[in-house]
Image (cartoon, rainbow, N blue to C red; front, side, top):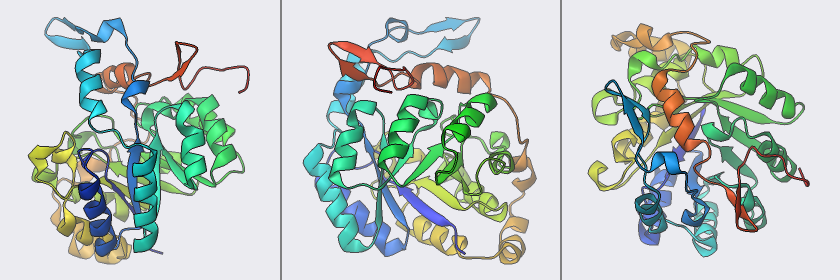
Length: 318
């Protein structure tokens, strides 16, 4: 059975509905299974003092610099409101593409559910947001959960939370872009100890590495591949450098249909770096992943009575 392909549109639409529509059409033409957006709202962004100026010690970044107001202004121009979500859903259905979104704040779960999504994605930084996970499993029939920047004990607890529920764990490395030598694609074997539905979310640099990482992950048995996708010039969006174009998406769809022998004979053997991509099942988090986790976990929160409630925080109704 062919691996499923998720075309992650992320914010490569630049907040433009025509571009968003053209992207969905391109995903359908390429034959991908899912088109995915991000349910991000600038108003859910949190202000955290330590990221206003960051911190560098002995030439090494310890805390990222992400000033709140500049990030809020950037995100506000990219917001997709409820009507834009409906537009996306309708277009996916018309084109025979499954719609998917990542929810970044628990307060947006009712909106996404009421709009009619029946599957959603959980970002790496919320893999250990157990109250959020419990809410999602009660409202949606399937979850795709990225596990980057997540400790092994957190992955295990999430799996326990989802016992007897259908979900997919997605291996990824939260370094953007991801060098091939730190991919540790064999970690999919570790994740398969919790669920048989395991995939890979690819953030490698397209100009340098093309589809190499996705090919090796397919050869290693990935059931689903998520890849950022764009129809614009790569320099026109923040995620452009890690986003494949329409021709590459078509190629990825075809690769997903190939058997292991064909992949190995015709493609893997021609990738000199493939052994370095396999890596370790339990590599632990690098300094850069820990630093990214520090910022992105808690980047968004629900606003309740003027207070930020983070996705991992227990509340009386959870």
